[in-house]
Length: 335
Image (cartoon, rainbow, N blue to C red):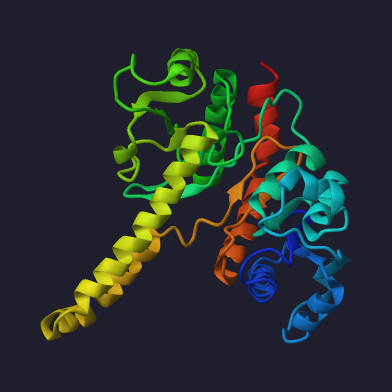
């Protein structure tokens, strides 16, 4: 790397913070020489946790933040009132250019609101969508939007499609990614008013590979690389995905432990099954970037373990190295 990438990390955010967050960040730093970490949060707690690790102290900084935004707090009110929270402090580091990215497993609502109003959108970007990678039989697909813009317009979805294509091509490495809009049928005339209005606009886009509608049942098969929808639909898809995967895994384990014969069989297939499930549970996908902002903000899952935090930080490295924001500005906002 030509320059040191500074990544602010919310040490207080998430179910397993601060231990898992600090461990994951230090692991990412150990594996990647070109990054430094800025922890935001309660300084005494962070220093106490860091004391149990061996790390390059010259690449770790602490910016104190005495407040923590809880998952149950109203996001707008929390961002306004808790100026000294680990989330707001981290977002301000990105806004001021003192950090290249911000990673948090904390309150989704606060991160979404703060990203839009503290960091701000790139000029010309109408809305900033939350875009996680979800596992499919074909590898991974980008679900955009999954939580930031419940009441989206057709013009927003068109921008989502374009930003998603840029991300999939330059971060995931999918050439000419297939873009589809979530619908209740494959036919063009189907869908609600938003889908019917957006579909012809996407067809007219010459800079994306629009393949038409995609039904929810075809998403896990990997029929599209970029899955476009407004946040209400996207969030339902994401939560069903997570719940169904967890339930299936539990039922498979129950079945394998049912009899002596199945237990013996389980021992034989355990390595292959573990590898398959690891890929489909999306354990290496990192967090969900909030695309279209002036700086990078990545929302990690609230239940993130150290590996999840590490992968989210690696996302930030790739995002900066591939100059995703510059590509968004060049290909979308100059039209």
